[in-house]
Image (cartoon, rainbow, N blue to C red; front, side, top):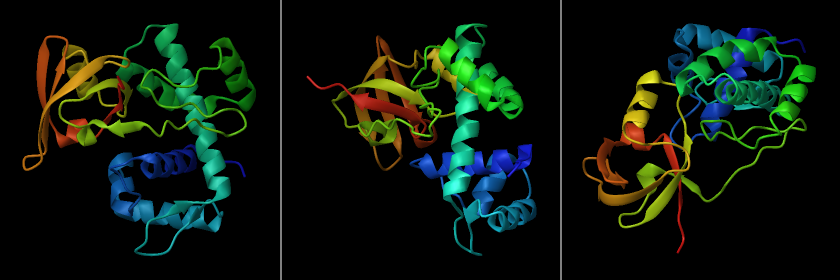
Length: 222
């Protein structure tokens, strides 16, 4: 089927929420992510179900069908390829690449996406560390990654993914050396207050769960 921008944004959002450790696909969560009303989300969910892009029942979380998943992966691929191009070639910031890719993804043909992929050397991940789906719809998943919230005190980790598009978050990351590939050590975990303290180089950082939930890391094994 021919898809509109709103349909593409919906299936992409459902896909991203399904892939997240901390998000869900309840209508209220989708409404918040897309900044629209709950009623508008319900209307679109019924429309998507009618086109067999999702399985949806009232009071249950929608789930992408095989066709919905295919459309979502295709738009995610285009988005992340553009982010990679804008970051590498035009030197845009982490927040800027997301904003511009949100527009470009909907105007990009499969042909152009393939050319862009080849030009970039067929990258596995974008600048945020998010995996880029292949032309055939496969996507790499590193099972050893975990969110920083679940990291263990006394262990060292490499930062692998920054799961956000928020400018304030990336400003914080830049100021505190939180970048892809950087090593951090967990100095302390505080379950009651949902805080975690990490060290990056000579800098100690105390952060709450809202931040540590969107920073992905991989343990460095000695």
